Length: 69
Image (cartoon, rainbow, N blue to C red; front, side, top):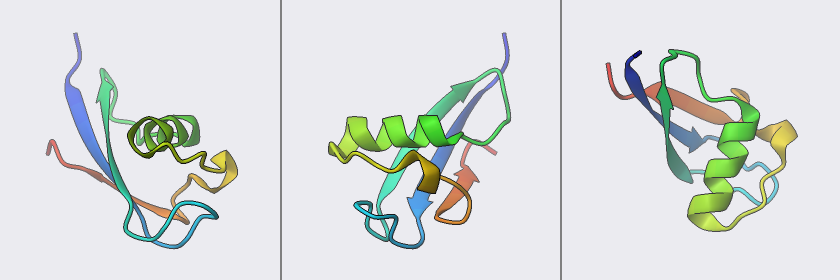
């Protein structure tokens, strides 16, 4: 079994309904890959009830830091 990585994903510029500074944590198991747009969108929906635009859930709009390092 691979390692678990905890990603802190923070909005750095307004992405339609997602305000600057909004932060979610995403846990990924068995991979070091950064969270993808679908995972970011789902985490925002789950934690805040905000329907994010998946097309804006990328590195241009979000800082992604692996906090498990």
